[in-house]
Image (cartoon, rainbow, N blue to C red; front, side, top):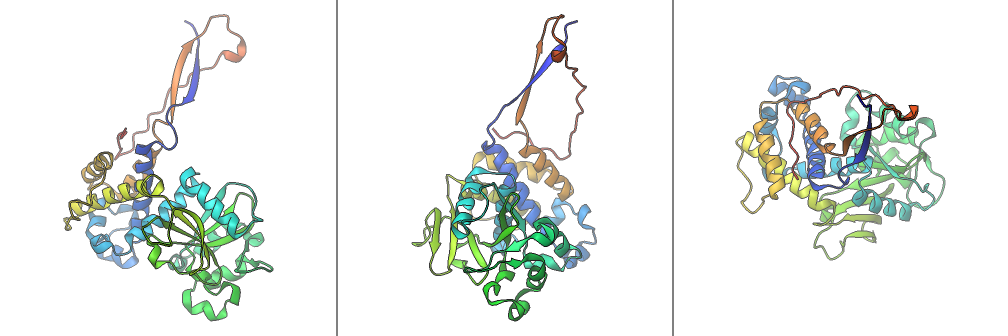
Length: 342
């Protein structure tokens, strides 16, 4: 019996569309879970880990898009940065370097803030720890010495009521959605993320804005300085870039929730692509599944078919370094699971 050598090679490009749809859908589902309040859970009489997709669809902010698109966009940008998605990371990095040229020439990193999350026990300690602990710094508006992250971010987490106690150069830092930095750099920039360019607001302490491309005369895709808000803006391209994928996946998730929750469906012309419609159909079929299971399955689907395995026979007298044992594969079958869209 001849021994086998296992060759592993990349099988699909990282930017493959079907996997990208699943990745963005996962971000939208996470934003939906993040939006649940203690009052919502009390009304459902269910702990968050046991909430089903059907229960979520009954209370999700779908009608008239009451802030859910913005939350989903924020999560999608954050996770695209963590995943190193080139269409997002490269342009945001350019905006960061324009705002703070002395940042390290490394991959950008993201730390989700959102002042409304600070009420949760231990959130601020975790935020400061992820930022780099006592060494983390916040780069304010203008030139001058940076501020120590741990000294002012807990104060900023109190919201607009803390504005009077914040130094002038970081008065509006409580509006931060993401803290941006680069690998192994202790310096951080406060960024605001808006799904509508018309709602963009600047302020002392905010340095970068992330928005989708639109027909607004001042908003073109790419990186530019917005005089009105005094922010370096990264406008994500639509439809060929990240925004096209986000809109397609977002519409699929929301239409699925409308079906499951028996909410009025959006107009017929708000319809995703054929691939995204297959995502929508799968979500509807998992209406009774726990939302955290759906999220895990979407995460699994976003990673599928990244590599292929090929077994090749080698001669009996092969050198020792080629004698590699093949382990029995462990079959992991999350329920629900999503099929490949491409």
